[in-house]
Amino acid sequence: MPIPAPPQPVVIADYGAGTAQNSMRPINAAIAAVRGRTRPEHSVLVTHTDTADNDFSTMFRILESDPESYLHKDSATFSSAIGRSFYSQILPSNSVHLGWSAWAMVRLGRAPMPVPDHVVAAYSNDERVRAAYARQAAHDWHEFIAFRGRELCPGGRLVVLTTALDDDGDLGYRPLFRSVVGALTELIACGVVSADEATRMSLPIAGRRVADFTAPFAPSGRFERLEIQHVELVDAEDRIYNAYRSDKDASAFGTRWADFLRFTAFADLGAALGAPDRLPEFYDRLHAGIAARLSAEPEPMRIPIAAVVLEKRRSSQ
Ligand SMILES: C[S@@+](CC[C@H](N)C(=O)[O-])C[C@H]1O[C@@H](n2cnc3c(N)ncnc32)[C@H](O)[C@@H]1O
Image (cartoon, rainbow, N blue to C red; front, side):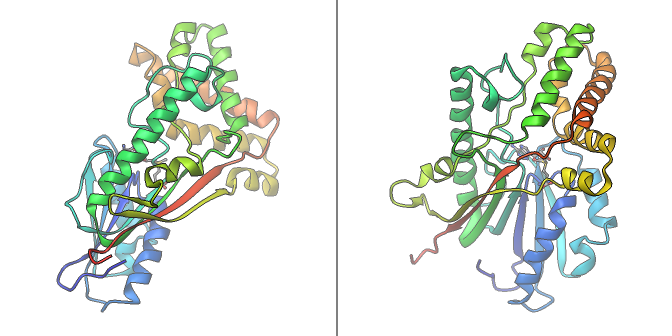
């Protein structure tokens, strides 16, 4: 990536930062690499982006209080935030030297249609549902890289980690999603949710195959001024199962996965309930149902992820 002449700061953008807790290590690594090429007083500006309803107060508190925060490791590094969807241009053209986005592109800009027979389109038996989500995923990837292509400086790079689909269309997390469907079925039987409400519950997420990432670049290998430098599919480590292997605590195994879903997915499922006063009971019962199912038979999850690196061509190329 290019380093601007001082006093222009090196700009690192973290797209879909959440609390920024998980951004510390990659951003520290990036700053260490930058420092190999700059004077220590050359300023670095890290801008964390997320949607407007992200809890930016928590994010800034973590940036301040976490001992691993880059703010405590490098006195010429500054942080800022942007509360707008990354499916539009959110930073000035040619202003970002390095972009980073982890576990965020999995979420689509919109859910194209309900998934009546599952909570995840990739596991629906309805071909039309799977096709509609695949089209939305292709559209969103196209938009995401087009806007990042404007924001990156010539020579700038973008690194994306996101949920992948393997060649068999496997999105991973099968036992987890099975437990969600099982818990919802039980909640219908107990009258906590109606069958209609459960039918409307789905997660606006999609994985992508290698060919989906490369499609906008075909056939020349270029898309506007961007080039793909690297695409790789790997199975991410299942840390929750690894913890279970060492502590043998099946109950903690189920609870950890249920906690993960409470944080990442419950709000999307709860949106199908008309009355907000029903949400606490729904969330608690869903959490208990998922945790119980997973604890009964702890299994490792496959977690296919894609790592994609893009570069914006320099003007002379
Ligand atoms: C699972 S969290 C990941 C957070 C962090 N990047 C990490 O690696 O842990 C996904 C984040 O992406 C954000 N996100 C999803 N869609 C987004 C969009 N269209 N624009 C900006 N942020 C988005 C979510 O709000 C959420 O904070």
